[in-house]
Image 1 (cartoon, rainbow, N blue to C red):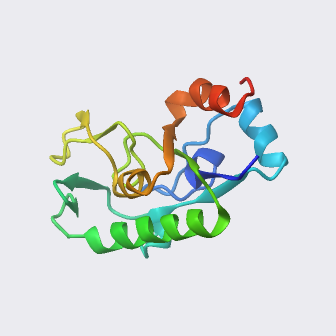
Image 2: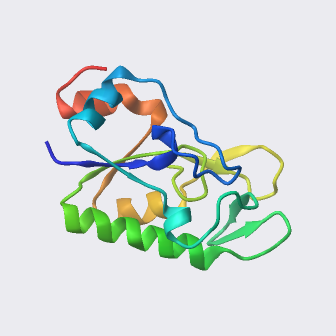
Length: 152
């Protein structure tokens, strides 16, 4: 099995904007990690943003903080680094944090900092898909396991 790119926060690494993680409890993921199949990555940190950092949301092609600071360049840099890592390691599948302005694969926040989710993709998920990488969210572990021929 080829390695799978995974949002570092899903493995319990405290890299989210609030300095926390969104670690998910999954024996199946733990087994994949123990076998060396999971490659953790945080595009926001890789792109140059600190932890903790102000929350950010997509507004069209821009990513801005609630105070209006444009952090699009950092998000795009992180996305490009994620893609480069996937290409270098032969990664064709990514498991990314849903809702994130980087990693959201089916939904993101509205861009108005109102807590409302809307259909959309984060910068990293969008770029990876554009280059043929299949992106799953933590809500799709069963579908990912099925694709890999395993069970959760």
